[in-house]
Structures are given as structure tokens and as C-alpha cells.
Length: 300
Image (cartoon, rainbow, N blue to C red):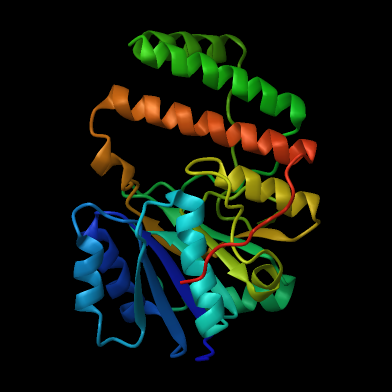
């Protein structure tokens, strides 16, 4: 086994330019020699996974795994996480979207510094978007409980129906009006302040060895959506430390592989609502304790 300090796991689907840009950014910015990049191609129909595998065949820092089917977000990433765990035994695994890239020279140093201080299980960086705005991800709140999850499920059923009926624009206007009437304004969070016990956005999550040795990946039951909410619930439930540190930064282009498949708005919204509803029901099952913990995945 080739022991490394840090391993990057990137789930790839179609958008080869984004994935290649991420790989280049790691080689240009990572501040430690002992690193690996694991690219998991989620059965891209444009065969870009095979192109990446051939391109990096001779690069011993890059591994490309070709999934035979699209496993979705959680299981796709778990393929890479468990491959990294088995082959590289990393101290840290960075699970990040293909449309992100590194922008700082002390990326690993800041992660190690935070771990030495807090012994975190999950760490979130400051995520910077193309318009220069920092993604508001470090939300200090409690995880969803049963009542709130049930309310969310009812809301998702409603949105799924209105999208099927082609009334999404009208529904959105009503929702904005109701939110304004109830003064449901989001809390303003200082994104330059380090915070603990926070909800983290899933476009980039950093897992320590402490997390990897116990969970071996993220909850595999969802296909797409709500992985962060489930992770947040599990970390608070299990009393694991989850941290946001703005000294660690990453750039996020804010467009995902799903957009390359669902270009029409209505079709995309139906897909989104369907999978959000399924994931919310899984979260409710986890809260109720009706799912037996089973995070076993095939390691390629």
C-alpha cells in the first residue's frame, strides 16, 4: 500500500474540461508531495471517462475508475473513497465536485493545522463562486428532526405535482410571496469566521482519518440530493466534530454534471423533485431508526 497524506476523490460525469482543470490545479497548488487523485467516472455516455483513463495511464498520481453504471452521487463517491482507503490509506480524503479547483498554495497545511487543533471528523472549506461571493454554507443550526422532515416531504410532493403540471413558475411566485409575508429571511453568517457544529455544503467535504476509519464513505442510500443533510444529522447524532474553516479555500464554478443531461428546465425540475423526495424519505427513516446501518460498498 502506498501511504499518502491526502487523497482527492472526484466524481466525473461528462464534463471532462472541468475534471482536467481540477487535476491541473492540484498539481499546481498542493503543498505536499504525498498525494493522490482518484477520478470516478459515473458511466459517462460521452466516453470521457475512458479518455481520462488513457490520458493519465502513465501518471502514478492519478487513478481513474470506470463505473459500469451510474451509481449516483453517494455511491459513486463511495467507490472512490473506498478505493483510496484500500490503496493509499490517506490521512485526509477531499471529496469534491469536478467543477471545483484549488486556488491556494497551503491547502494541505491548513487542513493539517485544523486537524491538530480540533481533530475534526468532517471539515468544510470556504467555497468561492465565479461572482466572488462566498457560498453561505456554514449554517449553525440543528439537524432536521422528524417534524421538519415531514413538512419538507409534503412541500416536495407539492412541488413535484406543480412541475408535472407545468405550473412551476406560478408556484415559485407564490412561495416567494409567502416567505416575504412570514419574514422568512435567511440568517446572515460571517463566512470569514471559523465555526463548529455547522451544516456544510457538499461540493467539497474533507474527511479525516478518524471519519474514514469508522464510516468508510457517506451514507449510500440516496441517489442524489440531501447527502449533506444526512451527513450533518449523523455527525451531530454521533457527537462527531464537524468544522467550517475559511482559511481553507476552493473555487466552485457552480454548474454540475446534471445540467449536461437535463438541459430543459421542466424535465430537470421533475428529476430534482423526485430524487429530493426519495432522499428526504431516507432521512426520515434514519431519524426514526428504521434503517440498519450498512455502509458496505464494492471496492473496485
